[in-house]
Amino acid sequence: MSDPLLMTDAAPATPAPEKTAKAHLPDAARVTAVTHWTDRLFSFRVERPRSLRFRSGEFVMIGLLDDRGKPLLRAYSIASPSWDEELEFYSIKVPDGPLTSRLQHIKVGDDIILRPKPVGTLVHDALLPGKRLWLLATGTGIAPFASLMRDPETYEKFDQVIMMHTCREVAELEYGRQLVEGLQDDPLIGEMVAGKLLYYPTTTREPFERMGRVTDNLASGKVFADLGLPPMDKATDRAMVCGSLAFNVDVKAILEGFGLTEGANSDPREYVVEKAFVGDGI
Image 1 (cartoon, rainbow, N blue to C red):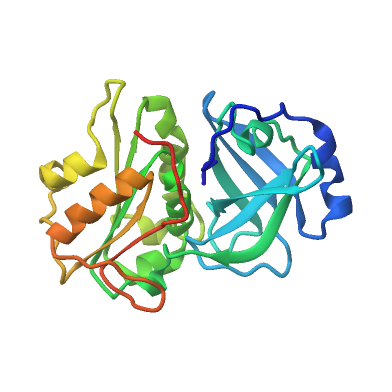
Image 2 (image 1 turned 180 degrees about the vertical axis):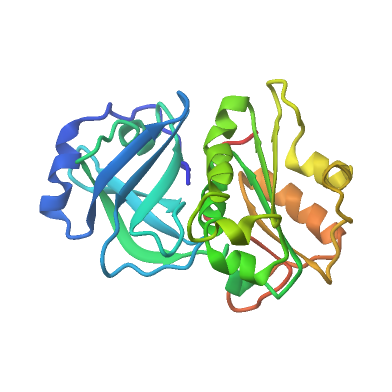
């Protein structure tokens, strides 16, 4: 998940807090890989604590130490599936963000703080059984769905999975594109994904083969026409939503217009929203 708070007085990143994290905190994790997708987006992988168990789609609190040696933590969705031996995260870079202004400079071998207490609503347990699963995201909101798209349970529970992802520019879709294209060759779920996963990326600013916000393409019916699918129906369709607060509000109205109702872990329904995420708006 991306940094939900913006500050103008954040200090520049320094290596000292990161290198001392493991010495002062038992719940630190070693960085194993970092990929910078654009000047605004990056992903990274860390060692998975042996005791950590989570459901695909959940999030944890991660962070670094601030200049005073205090933990600076934010909620981040785990982008890797529950079976992965490492944990992956996908983040926006906020120049003045108290955390991401530092986090974007991590390197392999550095330590981050990882609180091993996963929670979240974007899990299969929060949805009633259905035929189609719609994953609706903007920007770095695709992170929990990167986890769910790599989980065999997703394809065992649903006949079709539709990943709708909107970003401002084409380059910002690259993380999702590479992930989706790589699934067909995945030794664990490649055969399960074939013919079931439909990918619908769009942009809002840079010209692309498909354009428009998730909300507009749902409300107008364009996505249904493009993919040859019927409009959403409460009896067959389920949805998960992860994006900015404004995006979540707009999508909820559209889903409820189709007759779907919001669920939770304790009360499974037709759609769920990740309220902990405050993403980069489109």
